[in-house]
Amino acid sequence: TNNNKACNTGMGTPSPQGLPFSESNIQDWKDDAAAGGTITGNYNVNWAGATLGPKKITGNLTVNGGGTLTVSGTLWVQGTVTINGGGKMRLPANYALNSGTIISDGTINISGGGSLGSGTPGSFLFVVSTSECPNAVGCAGANAITVTGGAGAIAVNAQEGGVSISGGAELKAAV
Image 1 (tube, rainbow, N blue to C red):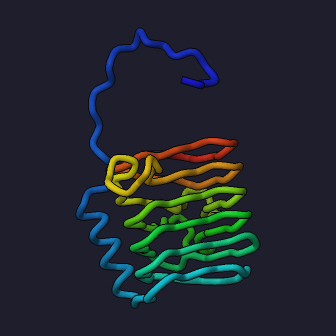
Image 2 (spheres, rainbow, N blue to C red):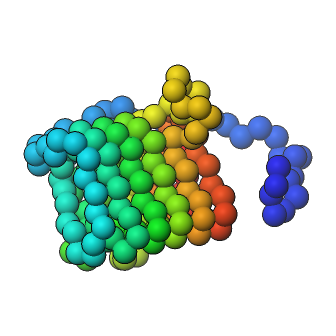
């Protein structure tokens, strides 16, 4: 519903496709992040010029208005990830055609002009939530990943949960 084009229901049911990331991929990324050390508690970015990674964060990761976080290695956040108010997360220019990953065991909320990106064509910043929201206990109907309010991201992945896209959000891919 609410599509900007009429649906063509005459095409039949598509064949099932495998999920893009295996549990092994996700565990490897978590291991890579943990090998870079652990930040205990929350990590907040409210300024331009922060760089972080690889790193495991036992709390939440928040990038607020005016904040810019350069992701220099895999990040594993055991809590929630929030990018809002014009906050930015990006890969460094030296990643060239390589990609980066941010994994959250909680929900991911990108809103209010928050954005994620690589800055280099062919390089992608993948945002992965292992949350089962909205169907898990304690989700109160919230999705694993929410992108809203003019926010943008490269690629979001919530293989076990839901993705909500609204309010002028832009994505390259969603699972």
